[in-house]
Structures are given as structure tokens and as C-alpha cells.
Image (cartoon, rainbow, N blue to C red; front, side, top):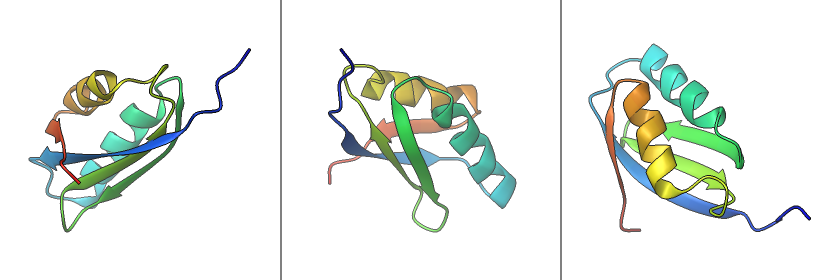
Length: 77
């Protein structure tokens, strides 16, 4: 049985300074199983992720952003 529970989580990312940085983050996070959509808001440093938290945890998203070369933390919305 596949879970259909999708949550939007928001993260604050630091250290990116160009549009190619945005693409790198979107690519890494988008590869995670359970992630349906990733949107990086360049101006605000926000990374919005629609995901199944049972499959793609917040820690997994933070690790994926780190793998792209940037530091991130879950944001208090």
C-alpha cells in the first residue's frame, strides 16, 4: 500500500548565490524517494518541499541540501 500523505515543509538554506545553485538544490532534493515537488526561493533562501514524511524525512532533505553543498535547517513557519 502506498501512502498518499503529502506535507509541505519549509527549510532555510544558506550559502547559495546564483541560479545554478538553485538548480543543484532542486536536483538533489528532487531525487529523494517520496519528494513530489521542490521549489527554491532564491531571494528569501527558502526551500519548499512537498513530500511524504514517512518516506522523505526532514533530516533526509537537510542531508540532500548538504550534498548539494549548502547548509539548511527546517524553518519555523
